[in-house]
Length: 195
Figure (cartoon, rainbow, N blue to C red):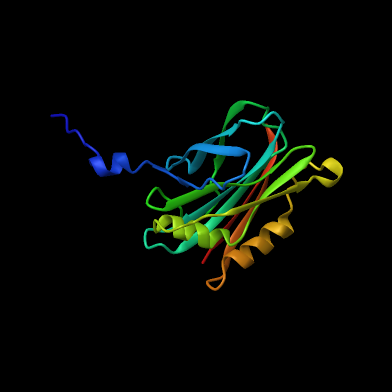
């Protein structure tokens, strides 16, 4: 006699979770369909450039556990430009320890650069992400200015990744961080996990 094992429906539905997306007014790149996939711990999203300039965006994802405790963050940038008027899909491993589809995710474009201009979100990003999860006002300010020297680089600065983790994980403390160069396309993924 053949015995069949059927996975509970809740387990099948928990295999992925959409991220809440913050869209700061004035940021020229938009995020679409940010989704975490438990199988492989992969985060996938589409970013859209509706301007007339090639842009180099920088993504930031904040992760909270099911109780609302801050678990860590990922920052991802690419050396390849997002061409004017286009969409591009990106997939990256979410290098934050212990994260599953039970966690909650908040994603935003933290910075975008063109050869002439830099747009950057200012303010307490972790606090804004937490407010967004609680359905509170999470308005963020985007400041733009000239791109002095036309810097479009996407460096993998491991000292900066560790410092961001130490600062972001206060008061619980930093459990670990990663600093991973990407080669196809070029770029960098930096993440940290809080205790």
